[in-house]
Image (cartoon, rainbow, N blue to C red; front, side, top):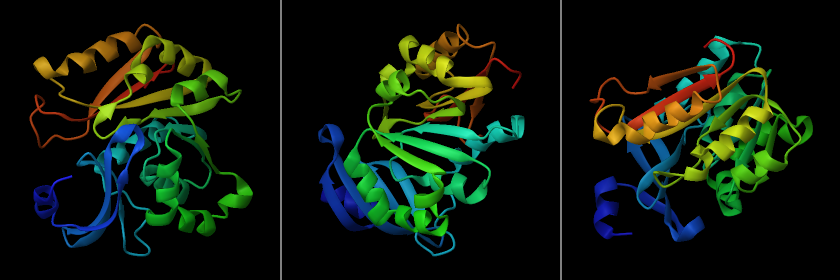
Length: 248
């Protein structure tokens, strides 16, 4: 970590460590658009964030995550969800607080990351507010996502793949061997959602369209959603892929 980047971010560092895989990890507080937010940085990339203000802590700082909810507009009856990649548990906090009929299992490879989410990202507060120690609406598994899919006996209505270290995605979770596992773990009418940080057009979009072609080998319906219309399609951005055997 460089002092220059600290100055550029205008943030107060409240925690520093070496993350899973040897990456540099920082947690900083800063103000953006008049809001106090807490950021989880891995090698300088924004991996997770939360609002600090009480009553606002379960809202989403990163707006791309709101588009995960498209699955519940497609089929409101979808209930049992799996998220691969927990980080600061931003989306789990949102889902549990906004959808009282849903359950969520989260697979996070780094146990230290889970501890940080409880300590710095208000996950303990969520557990207390929603009685999660008793009702099992939110369960956390510390392990590799591929291994979890290969060993769990559970099936899901929705599987979200949001597994990143810094801004680098776990490539094995994009491979055909994992897609087969996902297909086997989805219930009828289930939906698979993949977040990819990639260009949506031009030479930088090759990984995205390679993944789209691969998913079409396993699912009848595959659609793409760009999460930002305010930047050119040739720039890296969050793109969500939705895949299912039922119409999307």
